[in-house]
Image (cartoon, rainbow over all chains, first blue to last red; front, side, top):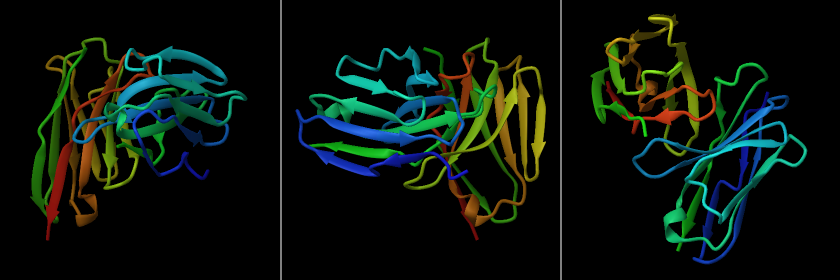
Length: 114
Length: 110
């Protein structure tokens, strides 16, 4: 059990560019979640997958955001045409089968949009 | 949306007990959590409690839940400097969309 892994740890981009983040969950965890955390706030739910199916999306997830989990293992979160308001820590979490309530978080990807 | 409220700061001396409080508004919450976040790191799950329980103890950690008042607390016994971090209270009625508070910054002084 190596924990939830996220890549990159930091990303600096210019407004209008596209960015993609990767998350590798704990092996055999069938649920994977994306959250966003801004400075001084708690994390906010964005979306979650059960295996490869995206089952829920928050209204925070605008059309510029897309998440995939093609083979039910790793996941990617893409932000198109980034805006300064997208600057945040993007956190990934996973949970084991039958224990959907035990979310284990990664260290996050810190995005800065200039 | 539903609210989760926490005090922003708490300072205690090493060796004392810390009590971090949280209130929430969602009467249909099924799970309540305490997470710890250290600088530059992700969130570490400390403990969680089902809404039909009123207490859970795990080594130095004691969680108390008053469902009637929608009040959750985390007591850390014999607080150490390594316990200095931000502690987040969270609740959910879905099991996937956790609703977090803004966090309580705990400072432990020698």
